[in-house]
Length: 249
Image (cartoon, rainbow, N blue to C red; front, top):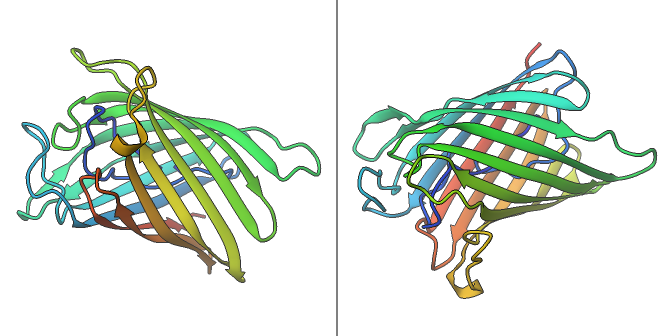
């Protein structure tokens, strides 16, 4: 499954769930192959009021983000996101445009480890991000075996709009999954917001989300479904998410 998770380019204050909730692994398109993936997130229980002037309340927001990708080589993949949001008030909005470039190193013979880097750059509508322009640097470090998958993304989000702090914000993401049946993995996904790298928040002030997730590969489709719970510092208490990668030939 081609991949791409997490975050709009927000300020250090906790904002609503991003349009893409995913931990990146070593999945890549074949060279010359296109990919289409749909990210769908729904805030079951979240903030009823906007977190800042011009923002949208997250409660009952449905975000749908098509992602288009292309395998350049065995090690390089390009992608584009086109996020759209449907709010509780019944209004439908386009929420910006983001481009990405992903690199995964060729693994050593016999090794189960993988590593790489994903870089995103783009524009987010003021309704979902105070800083409209931003960049994400996402290192990818993981382990894949027959029955286990472990992937860690120590993400750095950088606000690029004027009059914003351009210090990177640390937002780690972690996925642990185990094979439970042919073509099915079950596990946990963690997403955190720890503040600026030069001023990491104390543990009791950080935002943490934990998802129970299942990954299914059937009939050419790759699917990820999850239900997440935010801690007491999180603006959203319960979030449902789905990612569907469609066969593209």
